[in-house]
Amino acid sequence: MSSLISYLKQVKDWRDSSGQRHPLWWILLIVILGLMVGCLSYRDLSAFANNHHDYLLRLAKNPQLKVPSYSTIRRIMMGIENDNLIPIFNQWATQLSSKEENPDWIAIDGKSIKSTLTDYYGNKQNFASIVSWFSQENGLVLALEKLENKKTSEIHCVREMVDNTLLSNQVLTRDAVHCQKETIKTINRSHNDYVIAVKKNQPKLYNSLEEIAHNQISYQEDIRTETSHGRRITRTVSIFRIPETLQEVWVNSQCFIKVERKGPRKNKPYHQIVYYLSSCYQTAQDFSQKIQGHWTIENQLHWVKDVIFKEDISPQRAKIPAVNFSILKTICLNIFRLLGFLSITEGRRWLGQRLWLLPILIE
Image 1 (tube, rainbow, N blue to C red):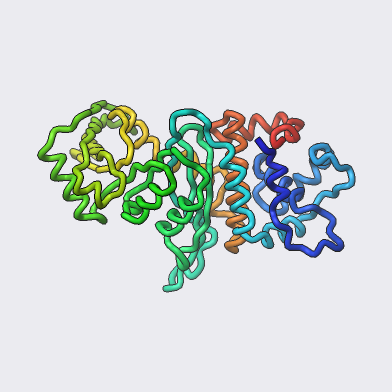
Image 2: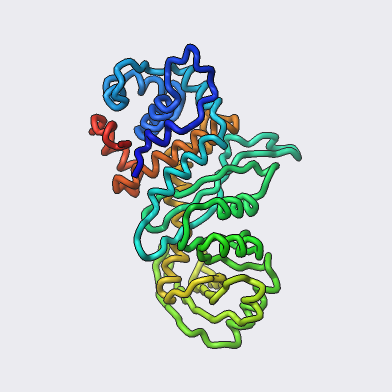
């Protein structure tokens, strides 16, 4: 496995080579390590670099390097093109993917960066978002892409990511907005499988699945009662075969899953049914676990970025630096997960007492 530093050295430096005092990879590395210990602003990152100068030089194995100033860090983060940094992240992260024989289940979802929102009350409202591929198995982010809501859609962005992915033989899970015939064809070409929610944005498909589930007996079922937020919920997962007429339209679809949830909510009966289209066969128990697992992307990634890394209230308002910081924060998250920390707060607490380990963490 190649080191993080070797990938950072591949990020294109747009600056004039004459008079450069700090290699680009060196500044990016300082930002990553500073973010890992909770330094989220330019001034905090500059203070981190000054306070840990000796450790950082030992890490770089070059005593001639200097610590960058606040203004240098700011200029770098504002100057790197997102399209320059994202492919480097994706190359580094792809090598972290599981090499196990069983496929990984990868949740795909977008998250807006609210600090970049412009024209809040107008008709030209715009903001940047990051689409992430999140491994259910190990909590790592395996791919990223950015989009601006005024320029492209999440649907189009995800299709491009699938077209360009180096991952294969994985199961990609998505919400109902991605239940599109062209998206499914794209996944099929990439040699991956899919499990995608089906709602009434696809009325013909939804009505067909609803009719089959009503009139046929499932070939496998899993029923379990769970306690969630103090409420007892009965969850029934049933698997049905897809008729050939639907398989011709929805490429490589093999079965569909009906997830039914019943229980009280706010002292009233609660009943929800959701359907999922799948290109792979699993047991009802496995489908139940993995469909629930899709939403770990919310509390193990999106929540972490919002609450721990304070992404939505970041002082970086311009889109380019905000997206660059989001990418580097994702690198931090991956490093902590590789160290075995599901909780980033616990990882920071552990690292705060072992700063001398910084050189080892990114080798």
